[in-house]
Image (cartoon, rainbow over all chains, first blue to last red; front, side):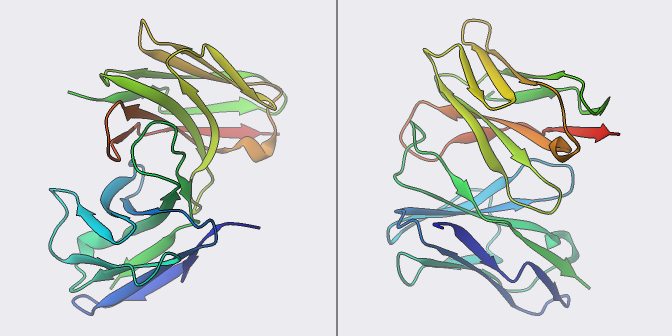
Amino acid sequence: DAMVIQNPRYQVTQFGKPVTLSCSQTLNHNVMYWYQQKSSQAPKLLFHYYDKDFNNEADTPDNFQSRRPNTSFCFLDIRSPGLGDAAMYLCATSRGQGSIGHEQYFGPGTRLTVT
Amino acid sequence: KNQVEQSPQSLIILEGKNCTLQCNYTVSPFSNLRWYKQDTGRGPVSLTIMTFSENTKSNGRYTATLDADTKQSSLHITASQLSDSASYICVVSHRQAGTALIFGKGTTLSVSS
């Protein structure tokens, strides 16, 4: 089945130790998104790629970076995780850019714990 | 300010009962409205998506309504099942190029036997 896959599902890292979360998709969608979702809160968009074009949200900390080496894969790098970065990280994809009619398909998420 | 407000924040119902979740939004200009179901520890899964001209859309036991004039939507769940226990998130799209999705905080539904 076509899907959005995130690895690992659970990640524990130490304060200040760089960590990378992975997302892959078999939908061949142009757009890939990274969201941060803290407990009992709505997902917050960090950034997205439209093909190779990177779009950063204005309030996304510099500590968060992303790479998209090809259509299928997208990575979220947290350079120096702080305790406040503990959250669920959701990857999503859509066929095109623009909110009109472009359904976003979410992966299962990676739960990040910072110790 | 573009906002999506959901009510109630949480809800507990008995298995087999019906329930209705509410979503009010101030997003303008409006493009479409989506309801997602998010199980604990999982990513959101789309239930329905409605454009400006649609009033009702069903997906099995889930029926969403939209009143674009009053900027209100509801999600009605019929004959609830234990597996319906989840967070239900209302998401509204801005009518513009880009990724502007405005998320509500969700309603947490617990269905008990």
